[in-house]
Image (cartoon, rainbow, N blue to C red; front, side, top):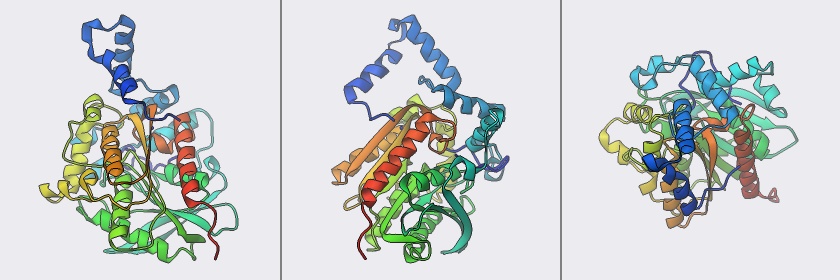
Amino acid sequence: MQRPRPRSSHARLAVLTVLAAATTLAAIAPASRGADKPASATSAASAALSKTGTRYPADADMQGVLDALAALDPKPIETLEPSEARRQPTAADAVIAVLKQQGKETAPSMLVPGVTSTDQTLPGPAGQLPVRIYTPAGAGPFPMVVYFHGGGWVLADKNVYDGGARGLAKQANAVVVSVDYRLAPEAKFPAQHDEALATYKWSAANATVLNGDVRRIALAGESAGANLALATAIGVRDQRLPAPVHVVAVYPIAQASNLATPSYQDSERARPLNKAMMEWFISTTVAKAADRQDPRIDLVNADLKDLPAVTLINARIDPLRSDADLLAAALQKAGVKVEHRIYDGVTHEFFGMAALVAKARQAQAFAGQQLKQAFGAAPKA
């Protein structure tokens, strides 16, 4: 579960296997037939549109979080200056609100027992960076995951995304390193990518101190953080650093030039992330238009050869869903093993909501399973 900061960062912006193409088309076709649709299908689509901003309905537990977020009355991020956007209630705040309504625990340590965390700093390219180290119960040394939070490179921090990072530590039985990289526009691209790579280098160099095993290290992230994880894997390959054994990318930003993909169209007005917000994130982050084609952002057109296996996790109700489709195809073309799952009934930001949302628990368990398989047995000294 994500740990919020009151009135802080932006709303944290799929267990089912990806549907076969024919099945997907069959599911989508009725929503495009207009007057030919049965009345029941029309009513269902209209109800979904009113609640999620798309034709896809949300599961009841997911809808409860969306309703709680709406009740917190966040202002439209795309209309705000970054400083004000960072003060808006987040999806993590909504999770806390629902837990309180249900009379449940809200402390992260209670929601994910068996994982402890400590905060410290690490040296970044432009100064010290706050970092949180999550350690599972046991003697270790443990496998390691270097994790990057979401927020469009502009918003959020390790507190807002605590649920995803802490959940991975539990499910993968691994030390997780989550860093607060600098945000745009104060630090324009490629500052975030430079600091992500620096965090990986630091984590690998300090594995023993962290009770981790550098021979079993992986990368993970959500949204903009998933972009950072994949871009870091490319940087690690190019600089011939100790290679990660796996990358878990949860609803990644995989390109910034085509905002007319199928999911940008069907989830243009989705909640909590929409097309207008994505354009705001991108334009706020890049220093110049050409940055949109930089391979660290434009992953679908980057050199992806010789990367470790990648697990892609997506939500059905998300403008970034098609980015992962494009990325999966590009990775496969480059000879990289890919496992891609899309979860129906949930939205962008669902992954860290395991305290409330069943699909989030399933997705975290799947990510943990993928990581454990990649880590394998502890290598002999």
